[in-house]
Image (cartoon, rainbow, N blue to C red; front, side, top):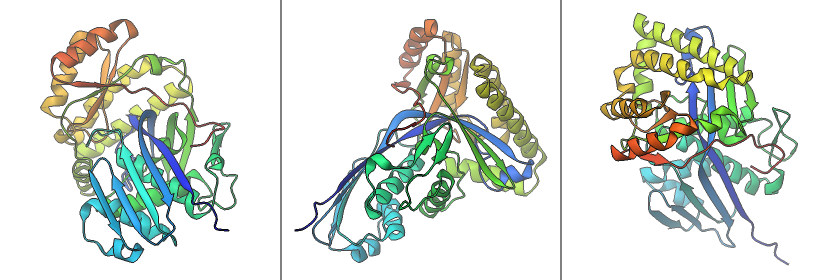
Length: 360
């Protein structure tokens, strides 16, 4: 009797970076004696559905790219020259599935939003293929226990979240052909508030809850309407840092200090101190490269603050995409109305708690 064909469905959150973004890019954190990055998982999700087939055909569906293509086998799929397929082809080449399959992907994030959607999708793909190729059950995927990622599955390809992240950022670098950081992948795996510490010894991760906190109450995500270009902005910073540009190195040190203070606030649940740090982070970030801001971001910042917001935080590498607006509950309605009146889109997003004792 033939075994039943499996269907795997996996979702992963995206993220908003709260402090220390760009410093997660190797080797930048080495230039400033190590660094800290703080980010927050949000419920704008990426989804991967994998279905086994009884034949050797490979079916690829991308709802975001409005793409659907079928190949007679894996070899034909990998030989296809289509940049839109590159992310999926690299995953297939890495996993080398021996059976035919149908692969469908979807992202709820606007294109170029600066919230780590491509990294989240990379994690979703890795988790889905791990479940499929290694014969794991979806409710037994590696889990977060007591704030520490623990892998209880002997068959999994990944012994820890760090191993999964290492593979993820190397695969995405192949897709993008640019240097990639690592902060985006962690919240996609574990959810929650993530504090990532970078040193010569590697990366350490701390995960904290969000439920009932001020960060949950004051969180508002707004899209500028313009896509950002993370690879261009970060590569400009990396190039200047390698050339020992004094202004860029000073800005990186300032970002490091702000991130360390933000991490301390999160560890102590002193979230109402974050707005002042966001303002300092903004000042340091635009010194890295003017392209981190844009007329759209400046307008959104002005509109939000005038309507009663406490601070704004550029998401990702900036230049467009999303902006985190920190606003008290009693001012939220006014800020939302002001943003929408000026043509900005308020996204219905909220923080995602740590993935504790549940399937990812």
